[in-house]
Length: 313
Image (cartoon, rainbow, N blue to C red; front, top):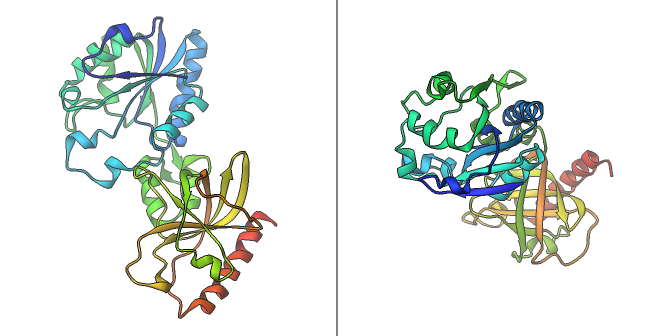
């Protein structure tokens, strides 16, 4: 998959020749709703015998429109992961637009004229709630055909639901904050994954029979809420089952930073410095403050029994 970076104004020499089908979206999570958009777009591209392209943005548009929130700077799928998921959905080409104040100042007709038309789409596909301009304007899918004036077709994909819940990036972020990984994975259509590097911790787990790896994640990665989880950790090409703790290690103090620690079942070895992928499966419980190490170990033994049951080992 080819990624072409664009800074406003569009340099037409960077546009790939030939007609395309163009999917629009930020695609954070590339969840089931996004997947349906891409499935429709891929089918159109195959029908017409052209490439499937996606137009998306390097960071969340909210950075331009309002004061920063967590949702503007942390993502379900940071950039590399988002690109990999788009490629897995059959996208051939990504136009990655640097979302700046100048770009955001385009009115809907200017965006269509200066970007969509010049990218050469036969069909433009997006979800029913996709917008392509400043909040409060008519930059929505209902009006896109009017702005297109017959220069391309418009295909709008309707709302996608899972068990009666609208599938959206915001609902996935809310579920992540609650630690509801089962709902997250249902809305995504795949197991939620994060990437990080193994670093040294305080080694408390080693002293109580539960040695853990400490994983530092990039600052733009949205993590599950505090709790204990069943996970798998990919080291090289091998997936290792484990149980993860996201929390403040409250048994040993009240002001500890939030860390991600994972106890790998039946594993011994030195993983410091390894770049790893964590796949999140279920939430076992919330974080608890125990009276001491013995009570903590008793609970960890119970957690391990549940984890082994989940993995059937």
